[in-house]
Length: 252
Image (tube, rainbow, N blue to C red; front, top):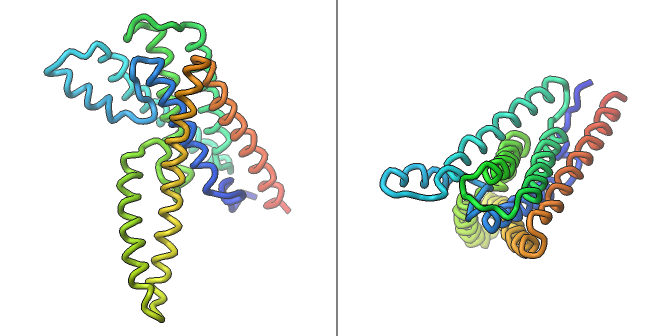
C-alpha cells in the first residue's frame, strides 16, 4: 500500500528546513572564503556577472557564470530522482538528502586535495565549485518539491521580503484582534505569527550557518565541509528509516 503521509509529516516539519538553511549558509561561507568570493547557495550574482561582462572584465567570470548551469543540473537531477521515487511509492526525501550529501563529500574531497587554489578559473577550482553549486541546486529543488509549506532555505532575499510582509500583517491583525469577538482577526494573527516564526527561524539558521562556516573554514579549510556532509547523510538515513516505518504502518 502506498504511504499516505510524507516523511516530513512524521516529525517536526519546522526543524528540517532550518537545519538545511544552516547548511546552505555554512557552505556559502566556505566557498566565499575558499573560492574567490563565490556564493553557491543561490546564483543571482552569476546572472549579474553574465550581464555585466558585456561592459567589464571580471577575472572570475567563468567560475561564476558556470554556476548557473551547475545549479540547474542539481535541480534537474533532483527532480528526476524524486519523480522516480514517487512513482515507486516513496517520497524521495532520503534519496535527495543522500544526493546532496554525496555531492558535499565530493566537494570536500576535491577542496582538500587541490587547495591552495591558484587560478580563479582553473580546472580544480571549477570542479570544486561544480559540486558545491550542484549540492545547493539539489537542496533548493528538494525544498520546492517536497517541503511545499517551507520557505526557501537558500534564498534569503525573498525570505527577508516575506518577513517584512508577515511582520506588518501580524501587527495589523493584532490591532484588529483587540476588538472583542473578532475571531477572523485572531485567526489571522495566529497564522501570521506562525509564518513569521518559521521565516525568522530559517533566516537565523542561514546566518548562524554563515558564521559557523566562516570560523570552521578559517580553522580547517575544506575539511570544514565534513560537518554539512555528515548532516545530509544522516538526514538521508533518517528519512529512509522513517519512510520504511511508514510503509510498515500503511501495510498493516
